[in-house]
Amino acid sequence: MKSAKLSLICFLVTLYSFAGVSTTERQALLDFYNSTSGNNWNTNWDVNEPVSNWYGVVVKNDHVVELNLAFNNLNGVIPESIGNLKHLVQLNLFKNELSGNLPKSIGQLQNLEGLNISFNKLDGALPQEITTLKSLKEMQLFMNRISGTIPESIGDLQQLKVLELYSNDLEGELPASIGELSELNILLISSNNISGRLPHNLGQLTKLKVLSVFDNNLFGTIPSTIGGLSNLEELVLSNNAFYGNLPNELAALTNLKILMLGNNAFKGDLVSLQKKFPNIIEFNIDNNDNKGTIVTLDTED
Image 1 (tube, rainbow, N blue to C red):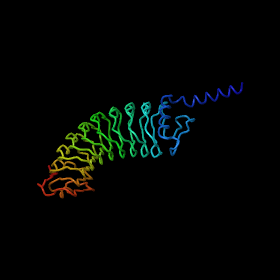
Image 2: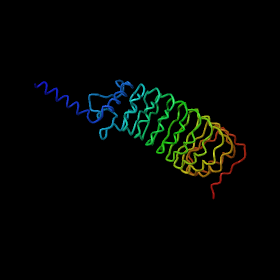
Image 3: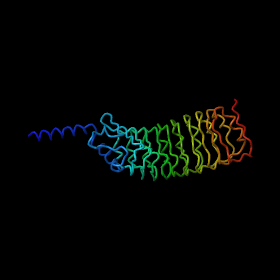
Image 4: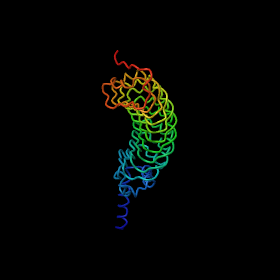
């Protein structure tokens, strides 16, 4: 009798321990653990403990809202069942050994605000579903092997403030819809295989502070609409195939601190550019054609 009572107590304690998080969410975490060699993580989970005690997991109101496993030696693929963590607000898997595609089920994380899976070995194309994450504010997927194009529907992410896709294998043109990301502060797409011209509507990104597209296959002239980037502090266009004279409107970017134009085919009086920006601290125009028509960038009214 005593043994039966003891067994019942143990069962009830175990049941109570797991009651806070749904079976579906707990199973999604276990799938993730098994799919990423959880036993070999730097800090792994004791799955007999309540989910709220698992390393890197934050539970609020009985739901998993944060999964932060950066620098934790995760090795494997992200399972489709990650999409069952529907209350997730932050997903940080920075600096691990994750490989394979980003699963389409990522689109089910409609509460997600921060996504950082940078510095891994992800490959394949960005799933179209990622552009349905209407709450997303930061997308950081740099230093992977992601290929294909940037989805045209990227402009649907109206809350996005940070877009960092540099050091991947992305190709194709920059979608024009990027110019619709009105909250964007940081746009880093350097070191890919992006081609084509800069979209004219980039000038609509009035909150943008950093624009870096160096080391791609971009070409053409710089659109005059760039003068609309009134808060821009860093403009990095180096190592592309841009050509022609810089637009007069560039002089409107009086907050510029970094201007890197090297290894293109720009023309005009590039040397005098530095004087036009009172806050400039880094400036490079190496390896351009400084023999064409001199462009006078007048900052006076």
